[in-house]
Structure formats: structure tokens, C-alpha cells
Amino acid sequence: MTPLTHDEIARYSRHLILDEVGVEGQTRLKNSSVLCVGTGGLGSPLLLYLAAAGVGRIGIVDFDVVDASNLQRQVIHGTSTVGRRKVLSARDRIHDLNPHVRVDLYEEPFTADNAERIARPYDVVVDGTDNFPTRYLVNDVCVLLGKPNVYGSIFKFEGQASVFNHQGGPNYRDLYPEPPPPGLVPSCAEGGVLGVLPGIIGTIQATETLKVLLGVGTTLSGRLLLFDALQMSFRELKLRKDPTAPKIEKLIDYDQFCGVPKRTGSKEEHPGSVGSFARLSPSEVAARRAAGWHPYVLDVRGEAEAAIVRFDWADRLIPHTRVADHLAELPRDREILVHCKLGGRSAQACKVLADAGFTVTNLEGGIVGWAKDVDPSLPTY
Image (cartoon, rainbow, N blue to C red; front, side, top):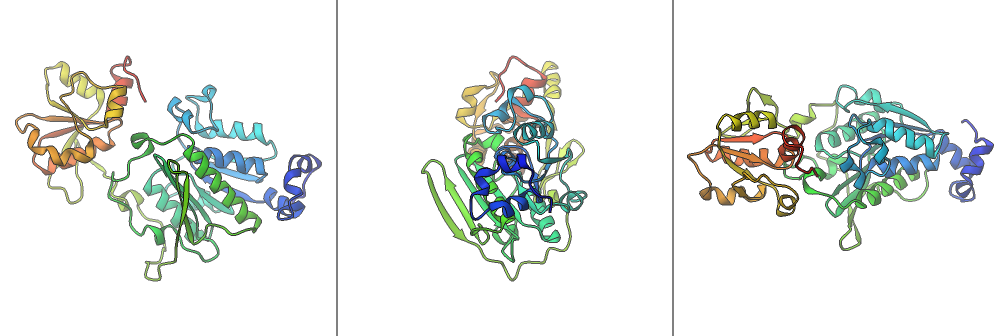
């Protein structure tokens, strides 16, 4: 292994005087490698603390750009990097923190086609994702390549963390054999998240990653750590391998596995659905409205979101989870235009309405898309 330099000895001195780390352990960190999938809320503290700790090689997978709404929780980025590629923003911050770290950038979606190629060179893969298809993909590629998967997830005020596929322990599919129905668990963009929460969970992931690399302590393998920020409480669930689980032998179509719908022309077909609904962009809706189209407009966001910004031409506000309870109150003699913040929850509501026989259209991109493409005077959130 490449030994520590004098500069590194000075930098990592607080590690070196720990009996559990010492020169040998710090040298191991210098010669180790970690792949972080995602540079968002979880990836931010992960990358900062792994770099500060002296992990010698860090890979970053992300193809998004920094948005002002990220800065409430994604602390590796800053105001000066808004509009910049996240991988470049993260790389520069890491090098400013620790120039001894090699940073590999993968500015591309993490897919079944490239996952093995990207993950193969690294000792540990850390899951900083926020969607189920990529989460299952990270798990499966780690199983196929025999690599530990340090897992974390967040939602509103709650978070989870574990270590999967480590020293014969369970993997993510032993915890969740099947994904939840599409849209059941909203993203942070739609459901919200306390800004400090990913900092807590991401730091726990960084801690577990360092323990795996150093071979010290007791990891979260076989345990699921649950954190509730409102109650400031931690609890654990025991995890075991499922002896009846199908063997993971290859990577699959994870969008299909997780029920992510695919476009089929101007209508969106859903497995098991008896209906379909149209999808229009904000500019298409604006053009049709200018030409005299006056649909019934249904806002399926929550009250807190509607207090931030709303269409003055909306007819009704019903949260998407309650649309099915109000079908009798909605008109069947008019087309219904459904919107939310970004288009995900409204698509779920459209499916409910289409299955019930309504003629419905989803506003793709939601009210945020409308503010960006049609009416910039509206605030975005």
C-alpha cells in the first residue's frame, strides 16, 4: 500500500492517535475506494466526511445540476454553484477540503447498462439515491460484485440506515423484496424533508463506511436503524437473510420492476388500469387555454404548498391521497386538468380519475414547470 506522506500524517493526526485506526488504519483508508451514487442530501455529508477522513479514491455518480432549492440540505454545494453540474461542484469542494483525494466523476445516469462497469473498481458502494429503481439497482450490482452497500433513506422527519451485503449479511431485498406501488412514497421534492435530516443519516452512512473499510467496530449489517427527528429517537429492527428469496443473477429493467410507467404516445397506460389519461406540458396547456379551453382544474397538493403559490384559475384543492373520496363532487361533463408541484402526484390522481371514468389530463411538470415555462412571476419551491 502507498504509505502516508508527512503532510497526511499532520492532517490525519487525530485519527493516528486512535488505537482502532493508527498509521495502519489510516494507510488502509488512503488506499481504499468508495463509490457514492448521488450528490444530494445524503451524498453531501457522505462525500465531505469520507474525503476529510482520507479515503483515497472517491467516485461520484450524478447527472443533475445544482438548484437553489437543493441548498437547504445539500451542503456540499453553494450559492456560487447554482446551475453547475453537481459532480463538478462536489469535486471542487472535496479538493478544497482535501487535495489528497482522487475524485472520479460519472456524469451519467446509473443504469443496468453501466452499473457493473462503474461499481467494479470500488471497495464499497454507498447509496445516496432518492428513488426505488436506482436503490434496487445499487443493491443488485453490489450483490453481483460482492461489495458492501451502505444504505440510507430519508422522508420528512424520518430516516433509515443499514449496511447490506456485508460479510454474509442480508441485502436490501431481504428488507424490501418488492417495491411499493408507484407513487405511494413521495419524493422529498413532493413530500418535503427537514434540511438537517439527510445530514444525520448521511453522516451515519459515512461512519459505517469508514468502519467497513477499517474493519473495526460493529456495523449495521443485520440491523435497520430508524431515526425520528421530531421525537429525537433511535430504534433498531433486526434483519435476517430470507432463505426463500430468489437469487440475484443479473441486472434487470428496474423502471419496469418498480412500476415506473412508460409513455405510449399522448396517453399514459398503466398496468392494471382500465383507463388512460393525456399528458400536456405547461406550454401546451397555456396554448390550449389561450384558444378557449376551460377544463375543470384540480390541484392535488397540500394546503401548505398551496399557501406558497397557486393558480387563481384552479377550481378545487384536494390532496392526491384523498381524490378517491371526492369523486362524487367532481364534474363528469368537463375535462379535468390535474396538477401538483412537479407532476408525480397529479399523475397518480389522474389514474384514479381515469379508472373511475373521468376524462383527465395531467399537467406535466406541475406548477413549478408552469412558473419556469409560462409565468415566471410565480414563485417556485
